[in-house]
Image (cartoon, rainbow, N blue to C red; front, side, top):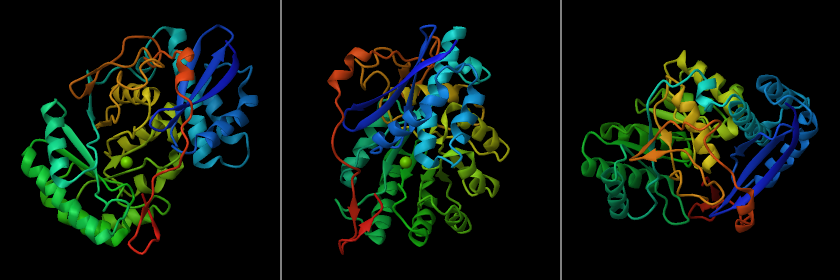
Length: 376
Ligand SMILES: [Mg+2]
């Protein structure tokens, strides 16, 4: 079998998604997704740059092709490059599993669990609206709720956000009782002193984890946080490749690994990082605010990884882009279930692409009260 073409598709819904289709001379196609939102053109450009190295190659040699994609340009590809490699890598696993007529998880060692617990997003709102939103999710069968650290509309003042965040988690814990699992995503909005204040005050509410308390560029910042707080910390969605996880894992700075299969280097790289996490007793909790291909790839990984905690599932399979992906992975009452179809478990209908032209725009922004830029 040989790779004959690689196509990129920017699909606009509420925001854009980048899907990559790899075609072969045997008629088997694979699909992947890349995960750096609002930078789809850049990721597509990197896919195009990699294409000459892949045409004519055997798609079954996934590890070899990963090394070619990662190292053939001499200069490391950074996060855009890793996201492009991710999409192609996921498509190669899809092809290989289809060729062997098995779901991808069979190639990753087989099922280690019968179902995958997921967490939904509770939309931003007033404290009352968000508590009610959390209650709705639990009543609908979800075991987890997840919401953002509050901002003040388009503004974010750290001291105010920490105070509002603590009040929100306390109110949600009071509403849901001791069993429900609560995740607050700080979304890298705080600097270490405010993140420390937040995490310490949240301890009594037993959050499942506090996600991305600080930005990722300087991993030692999470080490600084670690010295001061006992609240479980989750990080990793912004990391590309195993090397960016190295310090955080080797120093035991994080409690949950938020790798993103569509950013980190695909299933090949995610699998290696999960193994590395296992040596530190760190479970994975894969990042997934993306489309049906990302969701399916996460599910395949989760089903075959022992040290797995919970799967982010911002968009319920089957309820998003359902004409573009008429087959998506099974979902029931807050859990994803093992697909039995060969490959990733999704089918892509290229004919529906015309309904989803790319949307214009850029990433949302937050400002401080003085008008200066702050993290979104
Ligand atoms: Mg996040």
